[in-house]
Image (cartoon, rainbow, N blue to C red; front, side, top):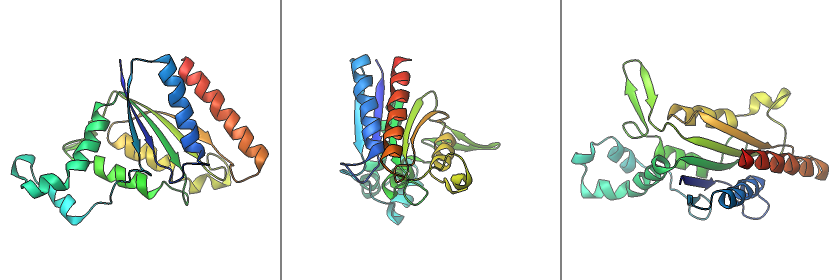
Length: 204
């Protein structure tokens, strides 16, 4: 039995392709693995607040020295990190907004990317502590940014690979739905490719 952390970061419910594909993947996963535990984290319906000075102060205070107020301040952040550390598999739906990720997802990343908890600084550089886990990343974009002249503007997938890798999540499979603003045939083709990829991943 495994624990799956399913995160959706699109601000849209209806019409979100990243949400649609990650949810279809999860539906098939549950059928194939009925005993697994699934943690649902919807960053649109339950947004994570952006970091504050008080939160940062609490992060950098040793746990045994934090005041009760500091502990309360980062209670949510600690819970989010615990979800991540507990999971065996992370399923992440992430649309591209202005060439990058949603601010909701960035806020979540800021809460869980913490020295001493999900990574450590060492004499030879940072070392990720969130290891031995699989990530399925479902991205969506209006244009095509995985290749061609627009690839240089893809700060979505490149950033996610970098920051997830920084904390130790290096086993990442990406399912891209691209060209969603390029007409109905392009949308249909993207969904077909996404569903074919999902079928292959679940079957594997």
